Amino acid sequence: MLKKLMASLLLFIIILSTSTVGFAAKANASKYQVIIPEEDLSATQKKVVLISGKAPQGTSITIDVYGAIDLTGKKYSLIKLPEDDAYTLISSKTIEAGSLGFGEEVELILGVNKIIVKFNVEGAPVIEKILYYFEKEQVERSLRNTHITPIRK
Image: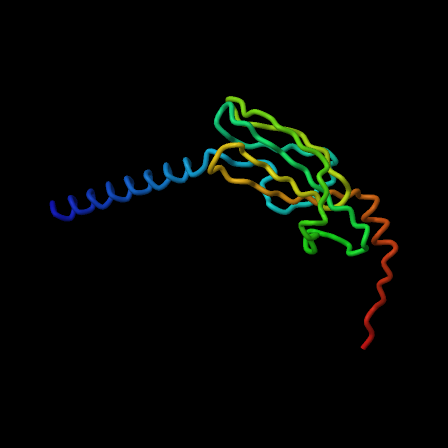
């Protein structure tokens, strides 16, 4: 009985110690992150969006916003993204991280916007987010102008 109790106690201690170590390693995975927007690809009806994240205090961060204006009629979307050379630099801001991280509002253009966040530190990641900005009226107008014919068998 004593052997079973000791074995159970030892197993319990091993389980608790490995899960704590795994959690701590995950929490310190990266000092440089973009938290908002969460998704790499998303759509929004907001012309001005917040870009925020975490970085050590005093870190210089550059936020570049590129837009793709569809002059070719290719009808860009989150499914059909433009080629890299189709983007034009819309704005560029350099900010400094504070004690709680960083945050900056950026203005989007209609259509596909590529936001690139560069932490100006060697070895830090460059993070890219794609936001599709649309206006509700534009979508409604597009749907009204779409001619959908029923399929007959």
